[in-house]
Length: 66
Image (cartoon, rainbow, N blue to C red; front, top):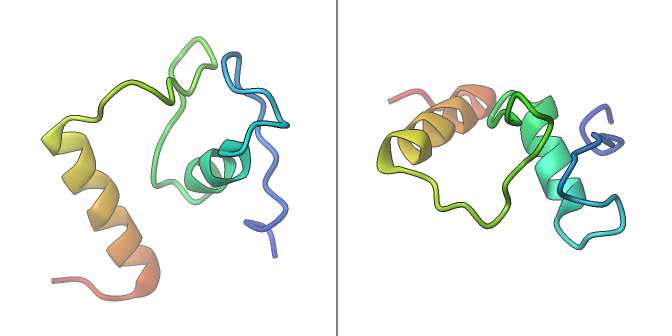
């Protein structure tokens, strides 16, 4: 329930944006982190290392460690 109600504030992603809830849930779950300035940078490509780290955190949350 906590994640479904996630409503983070980002400096570059308004709450009405289509992807705001997904970004909020990812941050609340600890899968991703906003930048120090409070932005999410939705259009910035993630690096391979960032993607692997996010996948590892999702797997931990799901209880499916490799």
